[in-house]
Image (cartoon, rainbow, N blue to C red; front, top):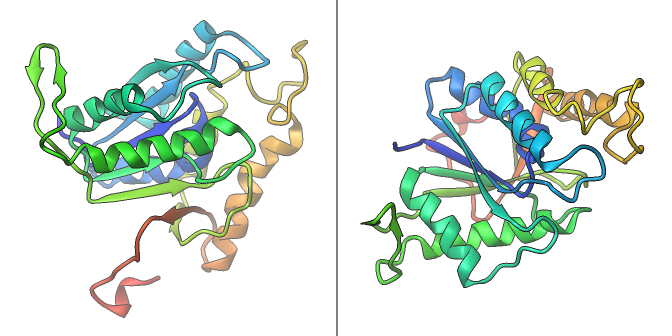
Length: 238
């Protein structure tokens, strides 16, 4: 299956939190979108890896993505080396996306920056014909995405561009809250973490609202890019 957009996250819920509304919007426009999680989030303070597996499946259904896979790298300890790059390359060559979205280039959680660099490097290497990979016994063809974008996570990085996601914020929040074990629940007996507070849940709305305010829309999500943005005409800009 060829996808238009393939989103990578170091942990299940990274994508929903950071670009869930953008994904929902792209799907509504008829684009085929998939998700690949690098780890199962097994080091998370709350819940278990098995619970996160089910929550990720539920979130995928809410967003309506075409596929979701998990590479089962070690949470907290995966590295950007040949073995890990080759596994990401296999996904890129399997789904042949035009656009890749991945973790923030710099963030509070060490896996986010590592995941960002790992996926970015793999996107380049995936286009080299002399790197051979096989999947299900078949030799894969080289493939390099046209664009690699990085979503914004815990830190308020300055975006290079923003996507108007007005009308899709509720779908984003619904997909986030599919991770019941991870986020704010006043009845939970689990330990409190930075993302399990009421303030963090509310920040999903107010951070998107603030970016929307800056472009004169209701809600927006921000991204950074690895190369200059280009438009055919000044009229392409909102």
